[in-house]
Image 1 (cartoon, rainbow, N blue to C red):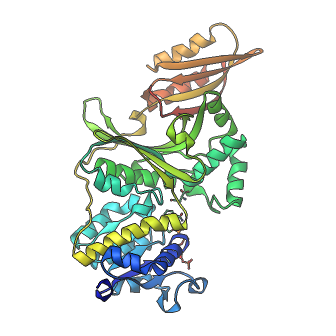
Image 2: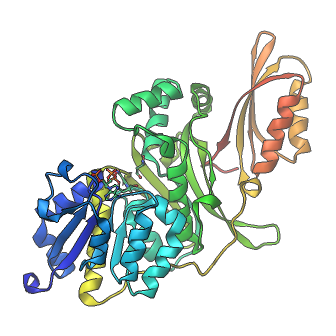
Image 3: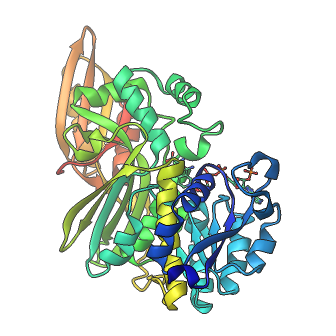
Length: 434
Ligand code: NDP
Ligand code: HSE
């Protein structure tokens, strides 16, 4: 009888948006969790900052001292506090005491993942973190386990719901960035301090985790090139629309070849124009979606809710069942796989494509001057569109693939041409053949 088995004791650190749902679901379906785990799952303590704000948790379980829970008799510690400290120290203590850990903390994993893996490994404990990237979407387990027999070449996706909500709304309404951000805050889609989301920090942490798993290499947030969406205005959205494209904040992790044929990893987060018929273009609002390209499996797409209490709790509880099951059968989950240790490729050397919109003088020779500048930098042009407006003209150029450094230098030189009045917008282009 499962009920007669020694229960799995769970210490919950943090009981906010996600933790509250974890507590609710464990309370609502105890028999199902017991059956799936092989033993009853009992929450034996919940650490918060303000116990009086938590009527949903029995008072006897609440504490403001997470260290006592970590040092106590828990089998599994679930960390839902967020941020680096005290989460890092608490999880290291738990792992060193042989307790398995479940966390949704992307910032911590992107900075200190290796330290946590090592502590888990040395002490026979597990570390699971499915909720850290793309909320409810089962993505990390497929990368870590299902695709362990394949070679992943590229992971590209929308992994930040807040910025995707803002860009989708700008595309739908034609409104500017600042007013859309304000509206997103009013509707509860953007946090009071949206910096981590709109400046790309959140997506960069997620990209580091994705690249680490996909390429069996340690990649930290500082290896990820990061640009946010605050520079995207109504003009950029309109320019994309004119070319039947839309703008998305993308996390792109790629296996790339250096000139001498050696492999490297490029990881970047930036806004990019993608064709409207691309599957990621239809991902709107706060949803997430990730494309994975693997050598044998081909293309795979993962789509769903990337945030929110219940969706994120689904991923946390999946991990909790896995960790608890391992405790019951004395099993072990996957370890860190960083055997490839590919070097990080800088953004300068990463191949990209640019869309450029220019205000130029409408007179003979301008187009050839602009084209010559591209030529000097060895950048090949894919599309040119010019529209006269009296004495001036609007000139749109979309390039073929070149190194990001070459493309940036080209923009700088084009901006200095006397016939170019203004570089109206510059944005990378993704999701189509170059
Ligand atoms: P919240 O801010 O809603 O909750 C944080 C919880 O931690 C609160 O219960 C808070 O206590 C508690 N807490 C904070 N500091 C301490 C401390 N020093 N000691 C004890 N308890 C503390 O966060 P979320 O639930 O939104 O997020 C939790 C984790 O999940 C984060 O890592 C986040 O990145 C990740 N995540 C969140 C998603 C979401 O949609 N919210 C989606 C995917 C991942 P009190 O309630 O008393 O203030
Ligand atoms: N702030 C994040 C987002 C939450 O907007 O996607 C999920 O990690």
